[in-house]
Structures are given as C-alpha cells and as structure tokens.
Image (tube, rainbow, N blue to C red; front, top):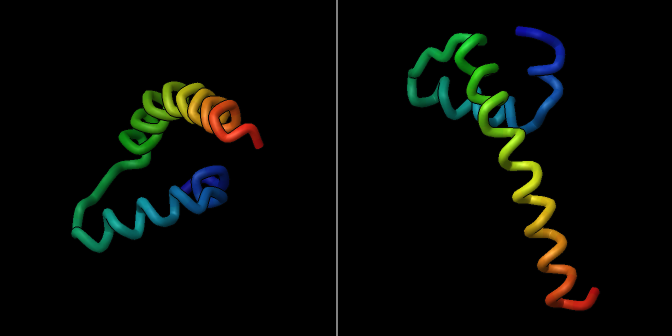
Length: 58
C-alpha cells in the first residue's frame, strides 16, 4: 500500500467495505478507477456547491 492511498478517509472506508464483502482489489485496479473517477467528480462537486450557494444566497 502506498502512502498516498492510506491518507484518504474515503480510501480507507472503501477498502474496508471491499474487504468486508470478501473481494480482492489490486492496487493497480484501485488506482485506475481513481484516475478515471476523481477528475470527473471534482468539477461536478464544485459546480454543485456553487449552485447551492447561488440558490441559498449564503
């Protein structure tokens, strides 16, 4: 396990759930999934936060 992988709470929770369901996920597969999903999720989350601030006026 690399250091960056162990620093994320989401990673720790995800790996705990995977282990609980008795699945084995290789570090390479985990990294590829992260590289595919994080770049898409960050702008979407930013836009969602911006929209919520515009709608609530806070």
